[in-house]
Image 1 (cartoon, rainbow, N blue to C red):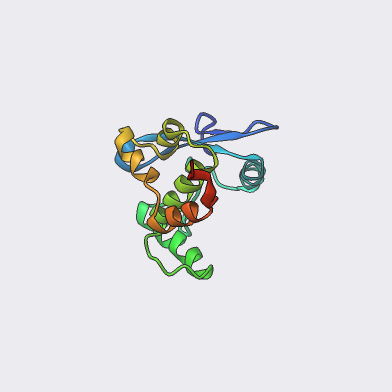
Image 2 (image 1 turned 120 degrees about the vertical axis):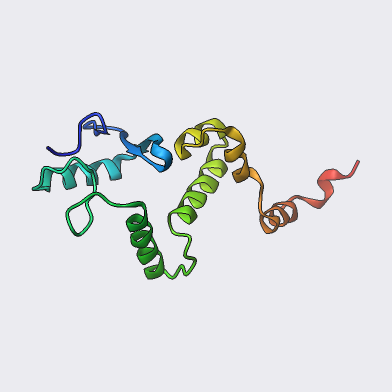
Length: 145
């Protein structure tokens, strides 16, 4: 039995959706764009096992939280990132870029799976250097009366 159809929704066009069970057994629905949808559809079409998990570790079992962290850290090191925070670093990057592109805190809360909006609000505090850069870009005469 491949991943259950209620967990993976990959329409032939547009965005898809993957349902994940995360920390504390919290269910998250993650949108997947066209490129990810096509890659997942190809992956599922070529799988030869009947395991219900979407991704499997090298032993053919379900990935553990630690296994995902090790895998993410390995790929980050290949890209030159030595920070060992792995999946958390990627979450922060996605959250920061999402807020900059479209500042919708409620949508970000849902994407990250936060139960409380105050947890998500930690992502909206701009870094001091970023704030300095933004202020430096303002025209000097704009504030003169």
